[in-house]
Image (cartoon, rainbow, N blue to C red; front, side):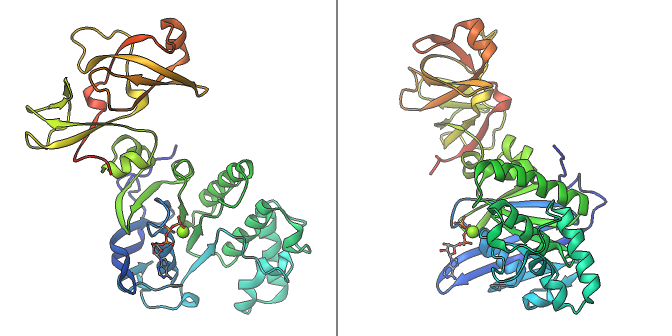
Length: 369
Ligand SMILES: Nc1ncnc2c1ncn2[C@@H]1O[C@H](COP(=O)(O)OP(=O)(O)OP(=O)(O)O)[C@@H](O)[C@H]1O
Ligand SMILES: [Mg+2]
């Protein structure tokens, strides 16, 4: 996985800067306090639940539905008030949005005709783009003669025709079936790398975001919760929301006790992070894969007894639902390798002792929503 943190993106220049952006629809605030800097050549995903404002933010950047406050700077130019035609981007929407009455070649060349490029130059550029998306012979066809995946490739070629500085993709894969979606997301990533075009892709699919993005912007209720590499979003979520939205997470609710300790029912847990006051209600977040089961002894921190209530075969791992007598109300799942399952005879009904290493846990104030 290519990791480009803000530090890792050193040498790159900031390309797009969104500052203090706000968007209101009447009395409803769809976006507030949006601050975001995207580096040149970076692939960024906006990720979040339905209605959190992803499309609204993308449309503001495109000038299709301008913000009600704040600034957008692209390549050093304040584009906050520019109409879409004077901005420098290509866009692909979820529905293919090709012109049905134009051929594939005419669709791809549409933006070039508008720029008054000469016909032979347009034909050559269109051919180059069709070859790039793997559809060199489809120029004379009409959109209806193509599959969904092919239409989305054509939409991508059309968006890239004028070599824009910024590529905007709003859920470009979500109307496609699973197999096509996987293949096309790989192709988009490859193409983006090759062209080096700064790209923003909106998605509500965390796996998609994790697999393609240099950085992910996790959004919730019109604000940004975290901007980070996929790795950091997964390992060190910045909020309970992010912890629960990305990947599978166990939430263990308790009370902060002595320094470095949390009371969980009858259990006394050690945590590495400790910014909370004694007596504060808090939640420990633990990933299913962070449970250890081998070599757990009396002095292993955070060891506890549990019973395997059910198991689910997930391929590389077996996910066990644990019943913890000291925490009866908390649903907890742990992932065990197939080796551990075989070696230790893990099965439904088995009593086990497991532990959660303190440095793998995240601690947040309050309880999950
Ligand atoms: N033109 C509009 N008028 C009024 N409210 C709007 C308008 N467009 C969007 N909204 C509201 O703004 C919020 C954000 O919408 P937006 O379309 O940006 O969400 P989204 O994150 O893209 O969701 P989805 O994943 O469902 O596409 C929603 O509550 C939506 O109802
Ligand atoms: Mg949307």
